[in-house]
Image (cartoon, rainbow, N blue to C red; front, side, top):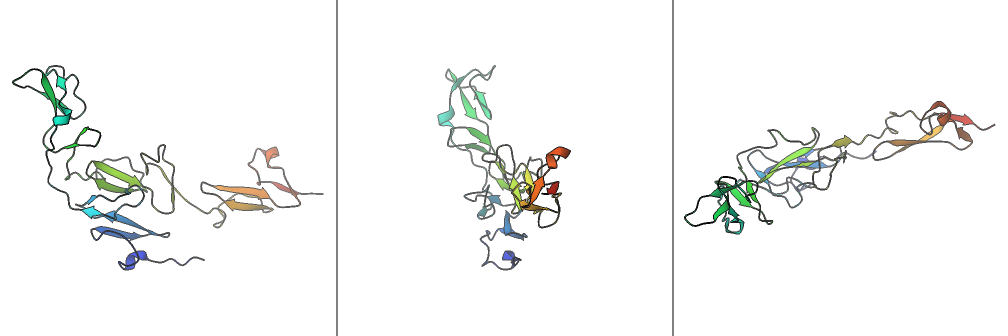
Length: 215
């Protein structure tokens, strides 16, 4: 047996931000930034709610590095979140849309609005995942006790969370009474005990479901 410790009972047993809610779990705990705060934790995908700050006012960041030649009629050369503006001199140039424009380290224009709560509105986080608001969207994370089975868990984690269940410990398995059940991350394995032969394949079953004693 493992003692279930409530790390959220006081602030000394968890590292959640003062602006975050601590949610106790059967295994560990979850930190989630309170409504109205933005999650700026170093590793939001793995450890959200460690640094939560109040949103700043939208800032207009210089778009000088993004001023590419363009044509106002066709919006040529301008990328997403950019617009071709008429200038007194030719050629016309691309500018980031205003207001609330953020230029990333890659020189991309991103429109953001800190008043939008992406986690309360439409998002593609798994229903069991933790959703954390960020300046440029949101992050998803599978909680403790769940396995991240997302198609792209590195770049887009928390899209598919599968609860870890010990089928062997809870007797939720179909192993033969004469087989040993071994729990795995995604499921479980059955293996016939010594002095027993595995005849599961004869019945179209997975290994360890039908075990016959050796004669």
